[in-house]
Amino acid sequence: MPIKKSGTLTVKEVSDFTDLPEDNAPFARTVKLYGVRTFMVLQDPFLRDNLAPKIIPSLLETGIVKPNKLRLIDHGSFKERVVEGLDLLRNNKVSGEKVVIKVSM
Image (cartoon, rainbow, N blue to C red):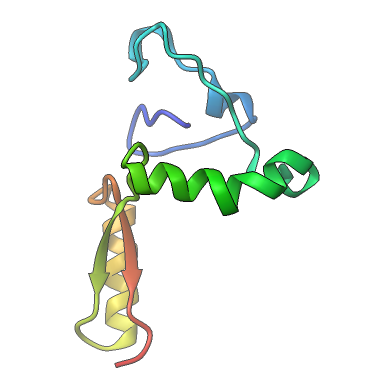
């Protein structure tokens, strides 16, 4: 999980996702983090057979993991919707949300 320190987010290595700075860690020191490289999930038989079909749905159903809220942009022309969505992202006006642009009206 990358930790955003400024207005931009750059990840150079996979360790950037799992190594948290001691002074800015959002979890208690007793929490053990395990990184899952999503692009390698299909190569691991256990993850391939269990993560998407069993583990993730169970975490969602119990409320342990909650999906990000959606911010739907569905007004104006398609170009205006895209520009608005990109402006939100560029200006750091999105936090904890997934921006969704409606394609057809």
